[in-house]
Amino acid sequence: MRIGRSISPGVQARVVVVTTDAGFEDSVRATFSASAQIGLDVVQRKLSARDQIDVAGASVVVIDVDAGDAAELAALERLMAQIGNWPPVVAITQSFDEAVARRLMQMRVADFLVKPVPPVELAQTCARVAKKPASAEAAEAQIFTFLPAVGGAGVTTLAVQTAMLLLNSGARGKTATCLVDLDFQHGSCADHLDIEPRLNLGEIEPRPERLDRQLLEVMLSQHPSGLAVVAAPNRPAEMRLFDPDVVTRLLDLVSSHFDYVVFDMPRTWFSWTDSVLLGSNKLFVVSEMTVPGLRHAKQLVEAIRERLGDGPKPQVIINRFEQKLFSTGLRRADIEQALGEDFAASVPNHYNLVREAIDRGVPLDEIKPGNKITTQLKKLIFPQLGGKAAKLPASDGSDGKKLKLSLVRS
Image (cartoon, rainbow, N blue to C red):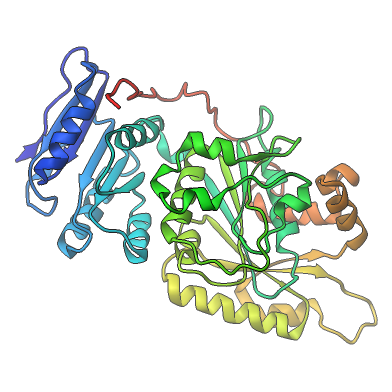
């Protein structure tokens, strides 16, 4: 038996809610009852029951799931596989921890909230995820993550330049691109770009659910090029362990509102690192051309594979590569032998060019167009096009109707 019903005349959006919590059901009905344009279907049963849920024509599906019940999580996983990229699913849980966050991200739910859920928070979340077009796969952000194998490998330089290349890769101008500095203790993305970091983690941490699009806009830094940057002020004398929910929500929010996202990761492995790496489309491990550097890169790749399983495949970039004719040091053949198929590319050393770009807060191409560093990065970022910039689909919403759920009771 299929549970659900079709949209009535005059209804522009349909919200399907699955719950056995009478209090949550009352809150949901009060939240969405203010507008006749919103149709609400409440399914009063556990997700793990045998009856199939009818999500055809739904704008948003809200699932009240018991995160401690393996059967319910398995049922949610089956539902996500069944519906694919649309409609978006918002998971509601009674509790939240690292394991739950990882499982939900692997399922690719649109968002998740923890009870008690304020009505306005539920309404805003549904409105945000429902804005995705029906071709959600094309609208999904492409995420590039740079992870250092050793200190001082130049990860930030590569992340910044990659973000700049992605920013200018659109066929009709600049794309929506965001650079996120996740090194909250020693991050230097803002310094490289000569902008002020505005991410206030102290304000978000007590209530991670407050982090929405409006608050993110306040905490975004803007580079004159048009690149959006999420970076927090340095706290070199503080070693703070942030709630993984803070970083997970930040990842989800940024990925929902930009075409491209570039993460500059710290070398230290935190409780939220797995979640970030699992959400990546491209994962680059950056090292240097030394024997210890190659060893650390190989060890890190093996550790990532062990932890992430079938997650994104890590690829190693050897930065500041130099090959002198009569040198007795490491050669490219040595790197290829040590790293095997994990070796992605070597980025040439051009210290004076990089130093000038950092001092001026501009991309490398602005100082020397067509330089060897950006040429190599283009081959890594756009391999399918031979190093040429990718062409993004139109993002004006013409390829799918965007349903708005703004008429709700706050």
